[in-house]
Image 1 (cartoon, one colour):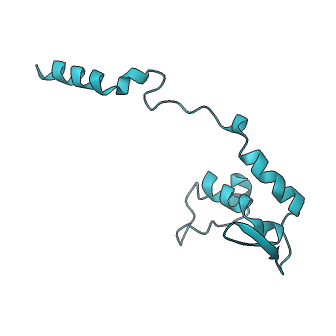
Image 2 (tube, rainbow, N blue to C red):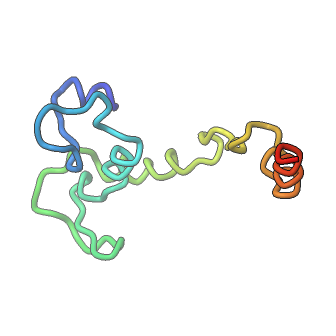
Image 3 (cartoon, rainbow, N blue to C red):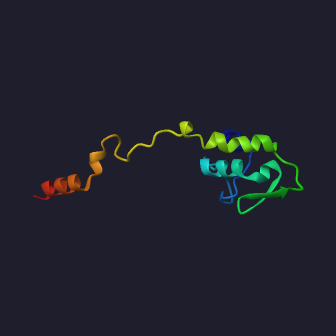
Length: 105
C-alpha cells in the first residue's frame, strides 16, 4: 500500500509541506487510516459507531470490519528481539557493572 499510495501522489496528513520524503507513509499512518470507520462511511464518536455518514464510503462495511482481525492477528507480527540480539545478558546491569569496573582498573 505504501508504494501504491506514494506512486499515486497521495500525501499523509502528517507529511511536511514541500516535496514528500522518500518514506512519507509509515505503518502507523496506514494502519490508522485502515482502522478508521470513516472509510466505510460510518460516523464514530469516542470509538463507538454512532451512525452512517453522508459521504460515499471508500470500502464496504463488511470489508472494513474484517481489517482489524487481519491487522491484530498475533501470527502476523514478527517476533520481537531483544535490543542486544539473542544475548539477553548483554544488558544485565550486573554484567555491565563488572565490565565497566574491568575497563577502569
